[in-house]
Length: 461
Image 1 (tube, rainbow, N blue to C red):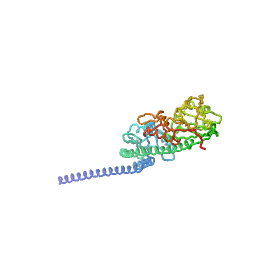
Image 2 (image 1 turned 45 degrees about the vertical axis):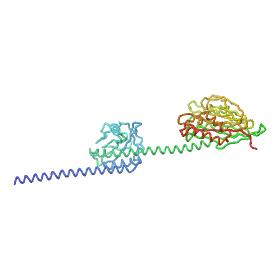
Image 3 (image 1 turned 120 degrees about the horizontal axis):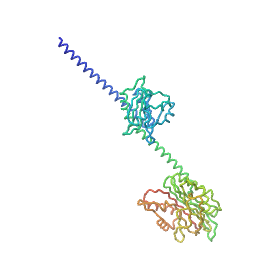
């Protein structure tokens, strides 16, 4: 019986041991299943939105719930400054928390961001790495905590921490392992949200800039006359004369630095200018607007072009400014054909004579506006006979480059003008721009194009 009893005891012990092993396996399987479900829950939560602010809220709420913690926070890394910051902070003191910046290595979160190691702390205040910078701001006592790095593609993008296990308990090693597990999907979703947020901001900035550029373009174009102008002069010859001015402009960007203007000074004289600001974009447009305002505001019936440019230059010059404008300024007496002009470092105009000659207009040049404060601009004089034409242009014409980096040049321009001698103003303006486009053959241009034509011709009776 003793033998039988012993055998039965061994059998019972074996059954109990097998049952215990089975229970342990079942419990382990249940725990693993629970952990898997928690990870699945986290994945569902963090992948339910692509918006960073919404995602941060979900991360904190989900982490606190799963870890049975009082609070949770995500602190992001600012790579450029080498700092940690709270992109989102809830509560009445959220604004104050968002002002806090921690150096990489400062405090427990800074240490985790620096080393890439997770920590479990039972008494935060006693830890030598503890920083009370945040706790003092929010007046929130931190007892126990877990802090893990958020790593995406091998880079630490932030840290996730949970604070104060509920019911006064301490976090366990298993809690730390679970938090490390959920940190991985959180980091991936957070990086995607950060990229999307950056893209949204870039898109919004681009759209705002495009809107501002459209407005700037409208303002800039508002300074320029859009129609041709005819001024009939008091006849000094047997035939009455008329001066006609017309221009075209095409910025290389939304807004540019080329400008022109023309208007009658009195019943017999036509004033005109064509200029080119050294820079491009909005700064050039602002400088252009100021220049045109000064030119129009200071011009009087008694002034010569040289006197006008001298006065405007004194207003534009600044010691610390790197911006300047080349300019050609003319005053045509329509009746006599006398043209007074002053040249501030601009491209030489072409004079197309009625007889068929095409020649560059020579004269004493000055420096561009805004280069030298005490620059005195000189007046030059030439006579336009009936049938003569003056063509002004900016260097966007002659310096236009093709794909072989060859420039359009003065010779090609002069040949075109000779060929188009009899063309009406509108046609010549179109042909000049078309010929440049044909030459460049789609090569991107960095300079604006502007052309102004002034004709002196017999008045139609």
